[in-house]
Length: 320
Image (cartoon, rainbow, N blue to C red; front, side, top):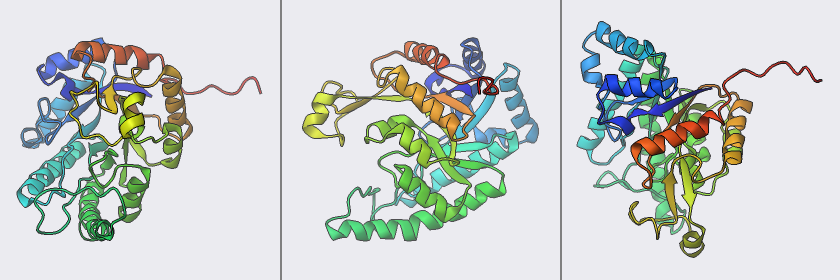
């Protein structure tokens, strides 16, 4: 396995300085934002797609530092009921897939998105329960009329370019747990897999070992991010929480740097299960910890994960 970082964390650094910093910290990979919510501070598809040589030169600037590009990330909502918004996210998605193919990056990371509750909607509508009956009607319409048709075409586009799609399972979108990820994968095909981010699953009460096993063969990329569960607040209000991310004292859960939400044993079990189920690619640090600075959160994550990561292939069982 390799250790990488999702680079919007360093959006205030120029590309060359960012790459130097990542290499100096002993990492082997970068995951680059190409627009939508991650922004495109370091990688602008519309510029790099102007010529093959530009794209190759960009990749060489990464590789000469001993790094690889683990994935290109364009998290947005191409299913948004506002067609202007959806079209913009769709354009960014397709440019990202084209650029990934051009630079031989195997994975594009993204969200599945979420439609509204009808063609007249203004905003997305995330359905989380089956009753009252209106919710069941909405959910059926979303999947059959919007989600599956869009991703069958958009997934085919990615497959034609030789690029895999790794969806983050994130509440607020139609794909938010292993069951919904596999539902979309079954409808579209193996071009769709997971960008496995345990932080989004921890706060839903999902066990990483069980969920990784359930997704065997369908994990294409991994984010290294943690979540702290506030037991006192959760005991009162559960894990569904709409309070500001800044209201740390009252929230039920908070995103944390790895090691500040779950202990080393938990992360060792997570990494070991990834290997057990065939994943041997990149763990990409995503730092969204409101209690730590950019540099401190990043450096602590690097130190923690270097002691957890499995970097060599197992030897023969000489003892048996």
